[in-house]
Picture (cartoon, rainbow, N blue to C red):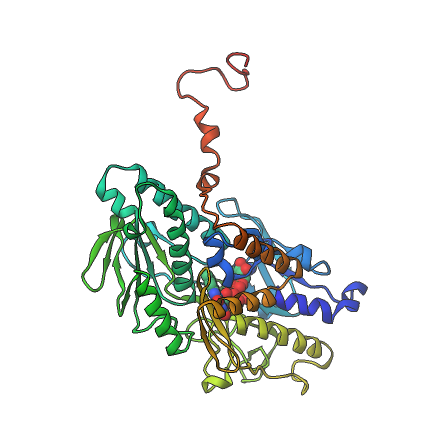
Length: 449
Ligand SMILES: Cc1cc2nc3c(=O)[nH]c(=O)nc-3n(C[C@H](O)[C@H](O)[C@H](O)COP(=O)(O)OP(=O)(O)OC[C@H]3O[C@@H](n4cnc5c(N)ncnc54)[C@H](O)[C@@H]3O)c2cc1C
């Protein structure tokens, strides 16, 4: 979306004259701003406010709600499927002149028994809403049941993977649950058990070691059981077994243990590196067989292996900062190449500025580091985190809506209603049908009401 927005600006006249046409293919009709998903899960932000409707912001582009299934660059054709999951395929063939590849990454699964059945991801707005409802439902269940084992399992929340997605989601949900239990007569905050398992010897690999250490201390002070150097061995039958030998029942298991490039890239003839990312030059053009630019292919974001000069030329880490900065440069370079060709001397190389990063840990708590190298914690970091994401959200209207959510959240206390029923929205309707001989379909109601 960011690349298309910049291209739309850079090519406005040509788009209007019909000389150029941009097609954006995306299975969702919206863009998702991931760094605020943890606050969606905690109920601080309305889910609709962290997504941006593509057709609204890209009026000069053709937006196709479909999933690319295959790309054949040799013949300059992409193949898409416009059908939703579980529906019969609706194939679409898309011939193109220039291709921008940015399908991002997907959660990196692992062959752990029970993970596929009982684990949950945390990468979409649907995941955030569903996890929030699930956590609140567990509090209801724990309050209602008389079975101590079930109560214990309901109040045990396990997160695997301590990057910004795992740490942010756990910290925000723990903060929300702390507020929510005040309304229960028989569930206390000390009954909740939060476990964070991380395979390496530190959390928040994207942060500086000092801030990661601060976050670790804060989580432990809040009672979170953080286990470093620990992996998930099994989740079969909703019993979590960790590599340190511990075993306990848990009805909530969130898997945030890293990402891998979009699997669709394997069904293309594009140049991929060992991890499956599109091999790119610093100009964001794919690398051709001769080591020069492969004409007509550009890539950015998590799916692109773009050399990072600040990391000795190793590929850029998958994060939003790189993705947005690369999208802007990609659009600039593509506009130049449109007239001057793929080997034009005017193409710029990607040079990321100093990184700035922040993670919210609940209301009034965060860790952040600035471009100038300052490391901040607590309420100041939290304000900075909010200001930074307000600036980065790629739609003025969404910025205002998120700001209003935060202002209202400051005036009233946290919203702790579970709308889990929305996920099973047909159940009320289906309950009205009784099995048995009944009346034939279409015979009308049994008795007037
Ligand atoms: C919960 C969470 C929190 C995060 N927090 C931070 C943070 O605080 N700071 C930070 O810097 N980064 C953060 N990130 C990482 C950051 O969001 C990503 O690095 C960034 O979104 C990558 O951008 P992208 O455009 O490459 O991919 P995405 O933003 O994932 O966009 C890829 C798009 O391609 C679409 N797509 C996928 N496959 C296909 C296909 N076959 N056909 C058509 N379309 C397809 C997807 O639907 C998606 O909309 C977070 C990520 C998550 C999940």
